[in-house]
Amino acid sequence: MSVSGECFCGAVRYKVDGELRDARSCHCSRCRKAFSAQASAYAEVNADEFEWLAGEELLTTYQSGRGFGLQFCSKCGSTLCGIYQGSVHGITLGCADGNPGVEIERHIYVGSKAAWEVIPDGVTAFYGQGDDDEKN
Ligand SMILES: [Zn+2]
Ligand SMILES: [Zn+2]
Image (cartoon, rainbow, N blue to C red; front, side):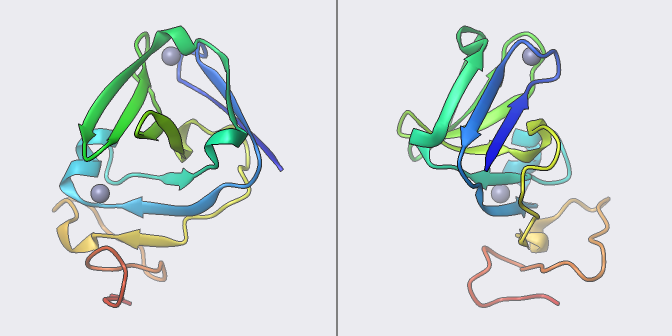
């Protein structure tokens, strides 16, 4: 399995030679800001299977705390990946090309979703981080 992705302007491109893991969408207030959306859409990768193909020098890193950060294109603003302690931790599914081979498995922190968001019926949703608090 190989997954590719790029930012909105196309200057930054990457590929993942491997499977994505743990695709999820977090509806907490921090993820809404970080992803400029109703929720995150994110999947983890193995750092050694991830490679920047173009535009790595255009990346800007925002450290959000506890070793985690986000990297985004400084030209167009797309958030491309999450990093943990300096290594790529996962990708934002919005910048993945085509079908990256995963579906969102769980929607977490729907208990703190935006007032204006309607969670669709039938999705696997949790009020919190998803240990034992399934909503549906
Ligand atoms: Zn860009
Ligand atoms: Zn979150």
